[in-house]
Length: 455
Image (tube, rainbow, N blue to C red; front, side):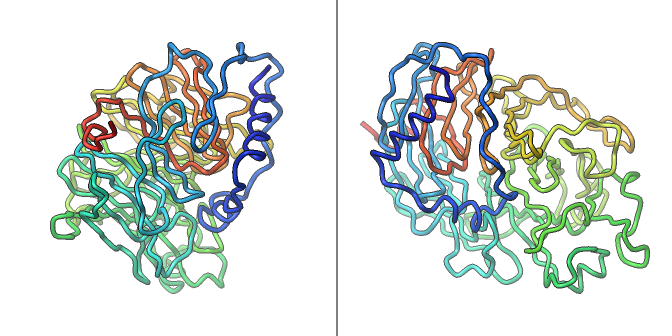
C-alpha cells in the first residue's frame, strides 16, 4: 500500500470517527490569507514507497502511522492547531499530555521555553485589522496556566502578526505591521491600486517584558526603493541596490504587500532572519544596530544600518537575473543553533506554489561565512540537504525543525507532521486533518517539559 492510498484511508477514517472542522476554509481564506488556494495535491509518485504495512494508532486528535519505530525520536511535539485555536504537547503515539487554556484565538506562534513557560501569540479581539495572520496580543503563560505577561500591540497604526521570538536577553522580538497612508504610499512611488487607503509594511520591535518598553525597532519603510516614478521619493535603480526593498514587487488589494510570516534569531552573529512570503525570500537584518542606526544605511556590525545584510530565495525580487530562484512562497526560517545538528545552517519550508508544479520542499541551506550582496551576482546559498515527496504539499503555513537524533520534523500545515531521516526515509506520520502552524519538538527530559510535571 503506498502512502497516497494510505492517506486517503486515513482521511476517510477521520471523517467517519471525528467531528468535522468547518473552520478550515475560514482560517485559510479570511485569517491566514496567504496565496490563493491552489489545486489539490499533484499525482502521487508512480514508484512504490517503502513498505507501509505498519500499525495505525488512533491519537487524541488524529492518527499516527509508524514506519520504523526504532528510528523515531522519542520526544514530544508541541502542536499549534490554528484551525481549533489549540496548543498542546503530544506524544509520538498521538496522545495529548498537556494543553494550555488560551484566552483568545491564536495569532499563530507558540513555543515552550526552558523555564516551563509558554510564549504565545494571540489575537486582539478588538483589532482594527483583520488581515491574514494578524495577532495584536502576546502572552507568557506559567506552567500553572497563570498569565505572567500580557502585552497588546494593536492600534490603528500598527499590529503584531504571525511570529514572535524569545531573545537570549529575555526580551521578546515581535513581527508587526506598520500602517502607511495612501498619501504616504503615493509619495513614496507606490504604483498599486489607486483605491487602496493604506499599506501595511513590515516592522520588528523588541520589547522588555519587565516594563513593556520597546528597546529596539526596525521598519522596512526606511529601506524601500522604486523605479516607477522618478518624481517621487525612494526612486532608484533596483538592480543596483540589492540591499533595498522594491516597494512595487507585489501588489495586494488589502495593503499587505510583503506578508512576512516568520522570523528567527542568530545569537552568534546578532542577526534576524525574516521570511517574506509574497517576495518568496528571506531577509537578513542586523540586530546589532541602535534604533536610530536601523533607520539608516550605516552603523551596526555590518555597517549597513537597517539595510538588508543579505537576502535569498528569489533574486527576481531585486531584478537580479544571475541567481537561480529557489522559493515559491516560504515559511519558518529556522536558524540551527550551536547545539543542533547542522549548526549555522538554516532550515526552511518552501510551500511550492509554482503554477502547476505544486509541491513543497524542506531545504537545509548552507549560509555563506561572510555575506555578500552584489548586483548581477549569484548571491544564493547552497543546498546542504533537502526533502520532498509527491504528497508533501501545503500552500500555506508549515515549517521544519531538526531533532537530536538527526531526523527532521516537518509540519505540513494542511496535513499534519512527518518525521524523516537524513537519508529521506519517512519513519513517522501524524494525520491530523487540521491546520498546523508549526511543530516544535522537545525531549522528554527538556527542562521546560519537566516543569510541567506531566507524571
